[in-house]
Structures are given as C-alpha cells and as structure tokens.
Length: 297
Image (cartoon, rainbow, N blue to C red; front, side, top):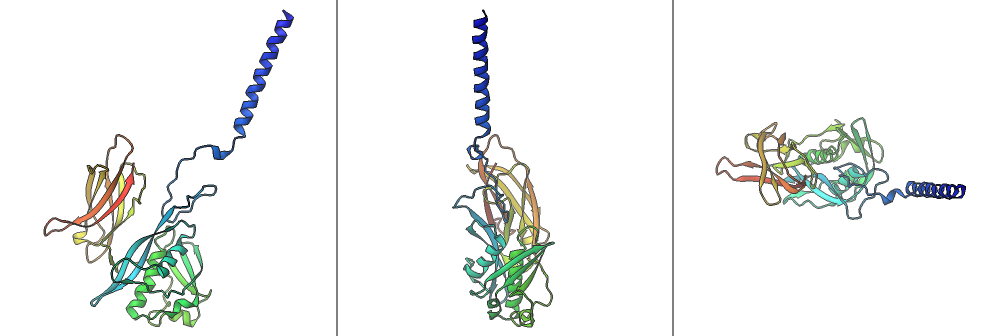
C-alpha cells in the first residue's frame, strides 16, 4: 500500500510540473504571435509606437492651389495620396510645392526650389521655416494674398493647428517680411480662411475613405451651394439606400459654410457601402457636385 501511495504521489508531482512548465512557455511567447486588430489611422495621426506600417499604406492630404481666371482669382482644394509619413504637415507642404494640381486652370505658386527647413507646432500655432528660395515667386497682389492663404489652409487642415507663421532661413528679416512684394508677412500669424475656396463646391471631412462607421453616422464637410441646402445618403454595396437626409450649411453660395448631417441606419451584419453628398438643382432636380466616400460598418 505504501508503495502504491508513493507511485500516486510521484504521478501527481509529474503532472503538476508539466502544468507549470506549460504555463511558463505560454507566458514567454512573443507578443508578435498574438493577433492585433487593425487600427484606423485618421488624417494627420501618426502610427503608435510598436505598430507596423504596411509598405503600401497611403495618407490622404488636402492641399490648396491658386486658380486665376479672366474675371476672378480664388483657391481650389484637392486631396492627394502620398506614402505614409509621420511628418504629415511637411509632406502636405512639399506636395503643394512639387505636385501638379489636377484641377484645370489651377497652378502652383511656391517656387519649385523651395525647401521646408523645419516646422514647429506650439499652442495651436504652426511656424514653418522655408528656405530663401520661397521668396523667388513672381505673382501679383491677388496671387500673393491667395498664395499665402493656400499655405495657411493646407497647414490648418491638421488637428491642433489654428494659426500659421512663416520664417525664412530661421528668421524674419525685412526681405522675408516683404515676401513676394505686395502683401507681405506684416500681419502674421495668419488664420484659416476658406471663403475664397470656390472648388470643389462640396467636400467631406468625415467620414474618411474606408472608415468603419456606426449609427448615427455624422457626415461633416464644407459646401458652397445654392441656399446652403446639402443632401446626403448612405447606400449599401448593392445600391440600396439605408439612410438619407439633408441639412443647411452655415452659409449659402456665394459664401461657403460647414455642415453636419446625421444619418441613422440599421445594419443586420457587417458590410460595405458608400456615402453620397450633393445638392439638388432648383431648375431641373439634378444632383450636382456629388462627392462619394466608400465606408464600412
């Protein structure tokens, strides 16, 4: 009997040792072996430390170009895709310097040799330090005013930036203050102003492309449309309307105003679809200046 008891005790101790060993192995497993859910990266937000970035990941950046016609001069807003970077403000300004606009008639104002020497953001103020090449632009007074505003609007697209100041080679001497010889930098810091952004008539700031949304879906954006009336709808991938609604922007054309338009919807299961935002012509009921954003839920 004593011999049988000893054998039973030995078996119990062996089992306990195996359990302890398996627990230690599990605890030491590398973190990379665990599945980590995908995280959405909104515009201007850097990937958190420890996350990996796919080599083909892109970032959407809004930039503003100048357009001059025979009767007017104004700004146009474009959204460009660039390779992922943590230096999003610098990337947006370099896009403004180097990338050709796609809007017919729009043009770059900053000289192509311009370099961004540094950017600091403190208490809502972004200070951009340019190389002296920036002063070599050749524009009239309206081109200078809009060119300055194109930079300001591009930088203030990012959360936390309300105003913008310029430096040239780290300082603001008299040549820098004169800027391009007409308006100058005497009134900086400068604030965001989209009142002279005529194209596109509508743009959407939320939701973003591919974003996973839930009800109520809050559609946000800017519009320059007749009587400020903005329409929106949510469609599933088969084209069925899941929700629709309308709202008024803060101003009607020729002014520009922001809008917020909530859409309540029900989805039985995860899926994909799109948000459409437009305005309706009072003449013939056509849907005009439609913007489409693919989303998921």
